[in-house]
Image (cartoon, rainbow, N blue to C red; front, side, top):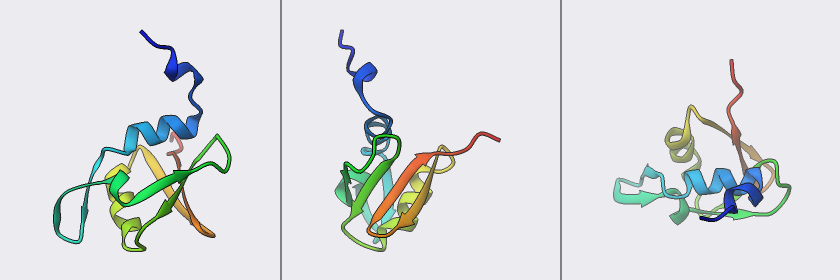
Length: 85
């Protein structure tokens, strides 16, 4: 048994939990988050993504809500856990 989850940053943990989530994009079947974006290291507390298509953002928001929020900032998409209400 590995202790990898103990050494992963919050950004890595978010990526692991969303990368294989299915998305509805372009009416194509079998599309997943990881096919349309890639993580970049900016800071470890939030997940920063570079998207391959601007049309991806609404599909990402729908796929990961309500657990995570999505914010477009400069050239990145920032994903972080949703605030607990």
